[in-house]
Amino acid sequence: MLIGIGLAVASGQTAPSASAPHDARPGFVGEEWFIGGRPAHLPGARHTDSGRAGGFPARPANLARMEYDDDQPKLNHVRLVLFDFDYTLADSSKGAVQCINFALNRLGLSRVSEDRIRKTIGLSLRQTFLTLTSADTANRADEFVQLFVRRADEVMADLTYLFDEAPDTIMRLRERGFSLGIVSTKFRYRIAEILRRHELGTAFDVIIGGEDVIAHKPDPEGIIKAVSQTDCRLGNTAYVGDSLVDAETARRAGVRFIAVLTGTTPREDFAGHEVYGVLANLRELPPFLALSESRMS
Image 1: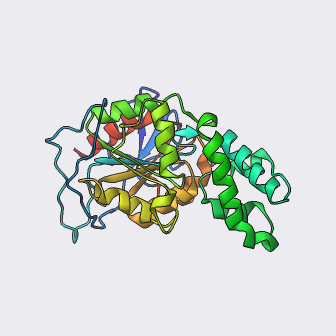
Image 2: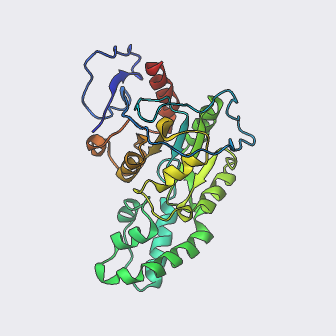
């Protein structure tokens, strides 16, 4: 379910007090954000390497890891923001359509419409194949994956673009001291290549791609692994994504989930899930986090 306190923001209204009844409509983007939280206190491993910032502002050294008693669940300030990649930071749908239909054609299978393919973006390649084809071809999933990757190595980076608001949002969050990371089913080396092309190659402290985990989303392995490579904890981590798979991944990891409506999942579909916030796009993320932090101060 959507949880939290409705806060009037973009309309310029004064935010209601914590005791004021909130509007139960999910999201209500543009006039109201839902801010709240649930206990997210699973202990996370930590790593002493604070990451790299390169040409981007480094996290201030005085932002130490939040310490808290794991036996006493509490809402902690967000210090680590993890992002899904496809439809959250970027749109690779043109590349996905080309690579999927290339692989299907080489396998002698029928092409699939762009609309159907768009709805599978974010799934693992194996799950994409199983979703788009009939059960009697399931044994050819490995061939499909190999063909897709071969074609993607040639064209995917050229056919992927970052959302306009992504670079500025990333810079603003770094300036405010957040650690940043990416957890995606997309291969890490491909994400890194795309980021380099947009001069964001050193903007993230950690990137976990499809080749870095045994179990793909909604298994929480990727989020847990990403947190373990920072000096943060699961309890002060938020995961930003565009799909119900992302929401379930965050739930299983025990971190807060922030939905963005830049993918194929409509706002109302998030109503049955634990969602810390529903935003129109990444441009709303910095002020959303600032407002939620102020409510906990």
